[in-house]
Length: 68
Image (cartoon, rainbow, N blue to C red; front, top):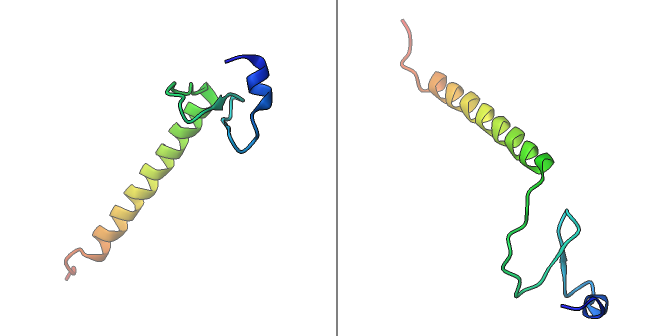
């Protein structure tokens, strides 16, 4: 693709990624994740796992047999 073709594309025709590259409909390349993005996903996953374990503990407490 030539630089002049890139300049003629409208904003509607291209999708901007966080790293500033534009992906076309016919573009099959994979985007590269930055260390910042990977770290953010890891933190979100840790938070989800923590919330899930808290929910499981609460459910086990609710449905536990009554103590005498």
